[in-house]
Image (cartoon, helix red, strand yellow):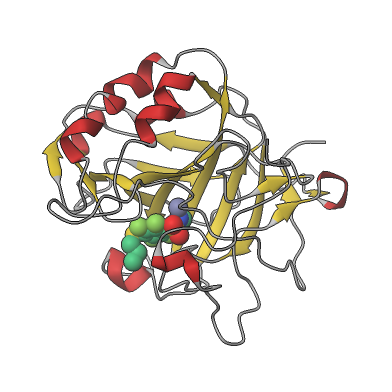
Length: 261
Ligand SMILES: CCCSc1c(F)c(F)c(S(=O)(=O)NC)c(F)c1F
Ligand SMILES: [Zn+2]
């Protein structure tokens, strides 16, 4: 079996075949979080999450992940507190995963890699007038990262997994209403936070990352369902949607703060 620290650098999808770089990037993501180098910040508040399940709109395959989109036309599904100065609206969530359980997450903790990682993407409605604008703004976005580890069946995730066959091909879309992403959050409040970037184009350095310390558990069948999705559109030669993670990026002059001792 592949050594667990081995990471596919030339993953199948064009996005990751060439090492994606932003010229002069100083705060790129993902990174390896070295637990002992992270700094406890007593000023970090608990993260407050209020998601309204009725803001859930649909699931779609965007050609590099499957994504659940939310109605962000009002402050209905928001996060605040933690390292944040104001509230941020939930726009979408998606996942990154590997072809096998030995790899798949984008971030690592002390070089430990997880089979998958959930990203909940939020934008700042105070400093931006739209999500598209916030992508380009310094700290316009907040992404909560949650690690997935192999373990017990995740009942909350299963509702989403059951919708995946309907979005097997790129650009497929299926209605998906009343889903509360809170069910995908670990109960442990502990997190790391650092300044970083999108891990897909345009790779803009606009993300305040909040990485939860504790993973959620999903079972083998649920991970296999992720791996049955396709990067390709209907009618094209099928390419399985796997290894849709970006390689690790240099920490450079950044400190990762922790909300816990
Ligand atoms: C043009 C952006 C479309 S929205 C989006 C996304 F689709 C995505 F995949 C990531 S990510 O970098 O991969 N994960 C945090 C983002 F940050 C995003 F904002
Ligand atoms: Zn992501």
